[in-house]
Length: 76
Image (tube, rainbow, N blue to C red; front, side):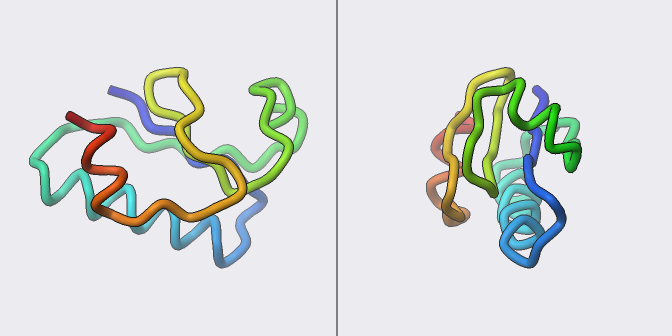
């Protein structure tokens, strides 16, 4: 499993990464977590608002910070 956190490194992006890592820890799932800060790479994924989370190539949320419980549902 691959989780990508898209954003420029703002506090919201950091919170999203924190929530994703916490969800992984609570579910026991293993995943590679990658931060993507390059605006061109973000645009290539059709994301116009950050932060965004991409799980296995699918954009799950953009422009908001999903909570840990929501991310856990996506990891199942």
